[in-house]
Image: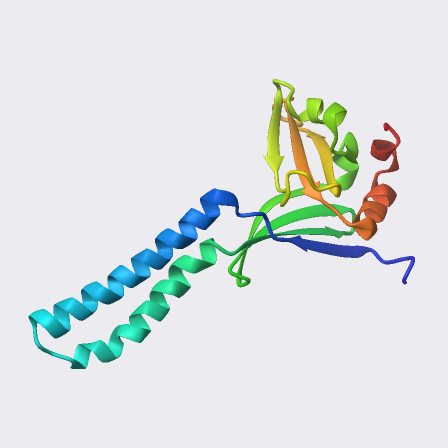
Length: 177
């Protein structure tokens, strides 16, 4: 292993839960209804089968447009002392959700009951990017806002390399626990 590695990324897939499963079932029902409606309209009402040739392409386009929002991943990257969180839709589209210099964090520690109080403070905005609510790899990073005076508590999931790089970038934030 390279001891001087300065880049690390970690990708997690959030648990979908009941809401995510319901969304997937509803989308599949919509696909079936579109196919049935299209078939009924052209084949039964208009008595034309030629437009049915386009049905697989229409369903394919519909799936590509809608299904990518169901398949979501979070990417956590540490590079040159900066933490970046991106949301990846359908393994194709990447949207940057959060970015901050690690040296600006005041607290970086594993998420437990005591550190959860930091996120529940009234002047703190919580940004939860964790995939699993009971994961042991979750960490909380507290970032003070310079303009408003409020704080941002960011919950992320890390691996050992990412924790090592974050500790190298801001050892004083780690020393508080």
